[in-house]
Amino acid sequence: MNAKQRCVDNSILSDLCADDVEQAIVRALVQLGFQDEKTNNSRPVMMRLGPLNVQLSETPPEYATAGLPPFWIEIFDGASQGSIDSIGFNELDGAELAAAVEMIICAAGSR
Image (tube, rainbow, N blue to C red; front, side):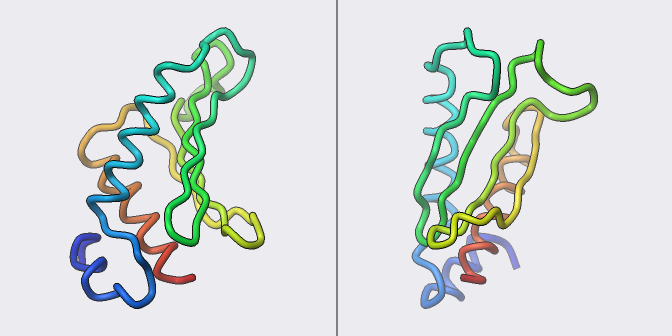
């Protein structure tokens, strides 16, 4: 079952729909592009998606660990703020965006 179908099937469990999550991630990526790049650490953008807090961050190339993607999406439980899941990516292409949306929809559905 894909994320769009899960939105319909699990509407009682989560108010999140794949299109809304995708739009939120793209907006966060745009916000990330406008942040000051002269920092020594990751540059996070926080999003509230249903019961979850989601953080998109980018590690500047000079501080990145070899082999790890520079962009990360991490999901936190809204109530406990405990980390639920995360995914890294090199660029936000269609497959990576779909994987991030699916991860968020699944996490929201399990809350």
